[in-house]
Image: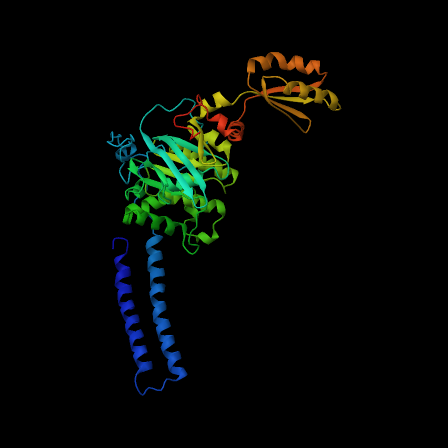
Length: 457
């Protein structure tokens, strides 16, 4: 009974015994032979049992609240403590996945500062060197009744210490993948390991932190009480628990609201609370499903900065629809579509391979016929992928930048179009995403930037 305070036991055990005794006596008194039960007797016994029943919760609320709101006896020390500043060295495992089991409570290094006002961390420009995988799946598959294939033979490796973005349109299989990796859903086929632990192993919960896409909390609980509960479930207690709860609440910017009831929290505050409870056990792998979906721009910036600072000390796998967030913080990216892996690789490599130049042309007004001629002529060339006209602006995606640089301006002149401006732009990750998910079968062809398979043909 490691999670129950002795003071509560001393108070509650006698009260429970008294309640049971009164209930038995009331039952006997009301049913004994020859007893004429009157309405006032029922009322009297009902009031007595109700009064005694209320004493326990009142005492639990008062004593428990005093225990839960006390300040930690020792402040966080991991920014300066050399004993926790250096993470343990990885050990080569015997299993196919190369990440050794990490300790269940491994402190976050000092690089994770409890200040969230710095600018977001930029994505790594170079690919992560090959090394141990924090997450590895082989042939991971999930079928639902009715012939629905949510995930189809996913082969995926997430390098240890990386920040990995999982992208895909609605129904692509992102949430299904994350829920299987944390043990909330069982795969139909295939295998996976997370932090060196295979799916289904009871040790998995000690190695991971998880934030669901739509977390639900007890509104009558305070933020501090919720995070303390999660800490107790992970075997933490006493001073260690109170200090860690204070750390993570401060880390996500909820220290001032820690003792407010969760029912009074905004959507963004609840999302921050979800991050706090996911970090309380110092997980080796942090899995987040749409972690910034309900945050305002400032909250999104701060949370992405926090995720970026975890790079190297923990592995972060998160899904999102906000592609700009992935560009700001991720090392590597995987794109799913209709349950299949379309492409996976270092973010910069994906942009270099698929982010072909886009030209934007602003014609002068009143030239609709000339602009139509230009659109027709450009669509007939073999160096353009897409030519679109939106609100008077031409957008041209090319597959041969050298030819486009030579032939675009002569084509404009030949069509007789007077232009106000011509701009060459580098596509964003959103452009790459739309290109790949719009033609998933073609994009998964051999030669794509992948470190895993692209699913079955």
